[in-house]
Length: 204
Image 1 (cartoon, helix red, strand yellow):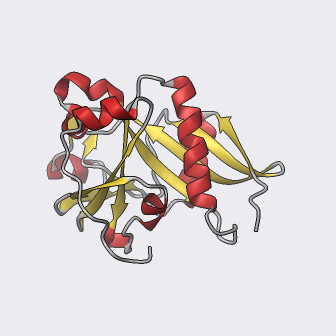
Image 2 (image 1 turned 120 degrees about the horizontal axis):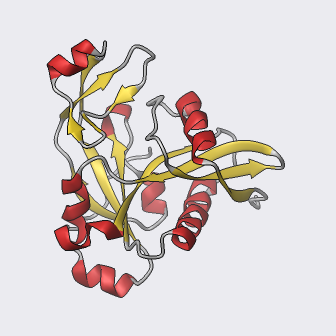
């Protein structure tokens, strides 16, 4: 079945609100760069790119001197019922759009959340590199049900600080780490610091 959708850049606020309404985390960074998937005039999906919360994550890809060349595919959501391969098709066009705005980017990191049963099959279908897993970590759930990263605006959130905000601690399992090499891929491959592995098996 042919994919007949359009991909257009949308304001970050619109993308953020859509993701907070539809994505399982109910959360999204402030100020993301977003592209929407449209069926006619109807928005049926959003891909959002944002600077990773952790400086260490950015530095891990090509080294501290090139952390500005790394961003994150922060959120991806597509409505159910779209044709096969829609998500990988959307990712490719979202990345193309991102590079028109941020041509210096050479690595786009993303994570598949095993707590939700995700292995990252969509990233595998998009030919991302698999770069191992993170450890288990403590996140927080706020009063509106949104999943909150333990680092906010460059500051680590302690259990005490989270409690004061009314956030409830929530242990999350490891995440599968994926990486897209973009732009000058020869430069990116030559400077890559992360180890790559065979894809993990799974259907999600």
